Image (cartoon, rainbow, N blue to C red; front, side, top):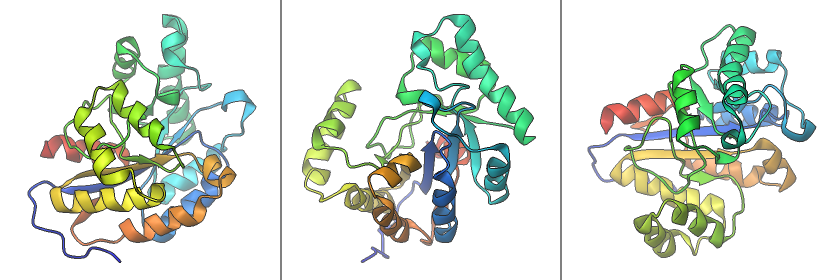
Length: 255
């Protein structure tokens, strides 16, 4: 049952979602998002990793027409810290330029392939003119974060517990580790975790950010769990539903 009576709070409650790789299964995902009136940013490379198919321009334009956001995800889905300066510029700035040429629309957000980046990569993204960039850091609900290190709350994926602990451990988030152990570790699946995290944001304010890959939803049969979570989170009074760039701006204003 939905918790429809959250306690009063000062911080806003912001809901956003993001989806990587531009796979053709994004078409089914966009339909599910639209039916639930959920926001989304789709991060799309120009060429898929290992020859994986990516959506054509017409499909991306249709996403824009539906109110979704398109973000850049490099040109060829390279691991950016491994590249020299010339290749890095091509992958980062080139992805913005090519997508904008194809879509006729400003591309404001960037996503690091496989969540891999360093200070040199961040500088390249910033100098390329992006508003911000999303990472693969999970279990975050805070409004306070660097705009080029936008974290997420949850991935639409059946992670084992150790994956969450490793994700938190990499950034030495002891509070996050304690929170996971006490609040989320006994959840039966990732969708239940998402509901509890959303209830926390309803009470306290913050950003609830779900991310994932549509091809994983298909491969692991996660569509029903996703719809269950959408039904729980969507259409709540007082909640701001926003794409990643708008969520970033709103969070910066509130922090």
